[in-house]
Length: 152
Image (cartoon, rainbow, N blue to C red; front, side):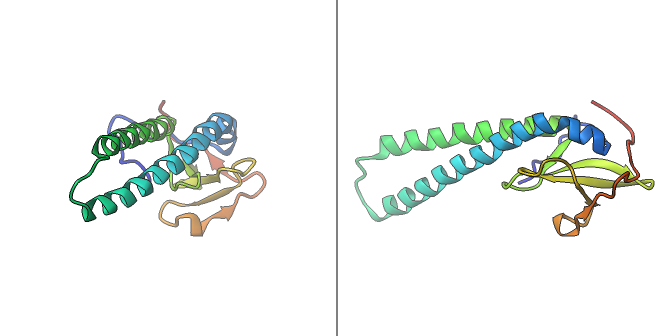
């Protein structure tokens, strides 16, 4: 579900402290994304069911209503894309519809992700860039996560 990389958005690096300070805004955006994802998914499932049923019939008295529902789904998908774009502009990567997010950071001279999931009180995990959520490790107290190059 991660959006495609946008060439105009430079990578932003976060310290644990900076990521945690950003969490109120990130939490609000990710909450919107999760709710919107469910709205879009429900609409898509309903439209898929109707589409399958329409293929079985010759005459369709509901074609106008169907077109309106498709238009509604496209509008809801647009809202979802806007929320994801808002998060991306903060330099936060959405990794899944459950609210899993990664913040770029630096640890011991290498790029890593600080990892947070909707519902967690703060950023408490990190993982290597190629490890994914399965490679999440708890941040040690006073972890040597430092800020790297910055851009906003």
